[in-house]
Amino acid sequence: MASRLTILRRISILLKAPPSTTLRSLRPSLARRFLLRKVLAPNVSPWICAAASSFCSGPLNLPQDSQGPAAIDYRSVLSEDEYHRLANSTIQDLQEKLEEYGDVVELEGFDVDYGNEVLTLKLGTLGTYVMNKQTPNRQIWLSSPISGPSRFDWDHNTQAWVYRRTKANLLKLLESELEQLCGCGIKQLEQLYRHITAQEKNT
Image (tube, rainbow, N blue to C red; front, side, top):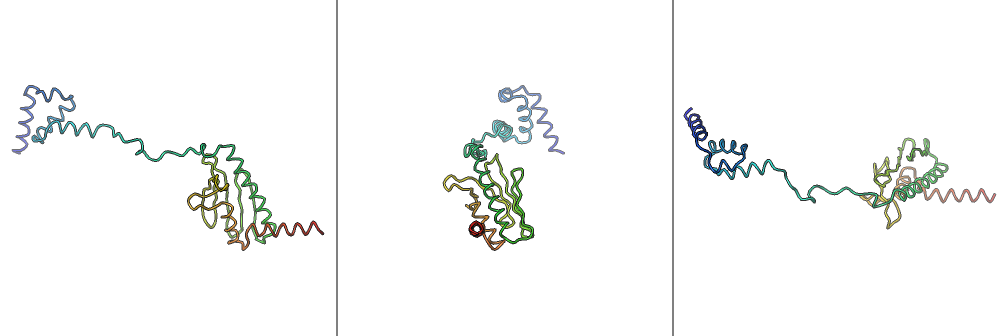
């Protein structure tokens, strides 16, 4: 109770006293805060309080490079026309090879379908592959029953679609996984298919 009366007396004295140079130099909002801090913390300099208030209420100016990594402009990596040419050529060529693969391999539920820029390969109970274009990112996305989702970028050095995280080549990955699932890879069946076709032409 005595402490509360002492605080009230200090506030009354400060309000009745003529404004000092310190209070006149402060803005009204800062002056009010100064009065309360003068009572509650009389040994703390008013300039420290004012500086703390200004620091906490002001905007935090961070360097530009601390705002996070800049977004990748995929248009500078590969033009849209060039992307469509490369992606369409890859998917169409792969579709033809998979259809030939299905003519030779004996697998129930095997089916190849292409529509709306999505290539779907069904392997019956073994799983389903889905491949589609991602134009904004200039990528080809693949969903595999073995390796899961992957995003392939065009690599100018190797002239192939490569998954940057694992450095996997799109066509080589499919070749390896289909051999693992079906017991025979695309290239092996391509050779067999060409051999059978050549024999049919000679007869």
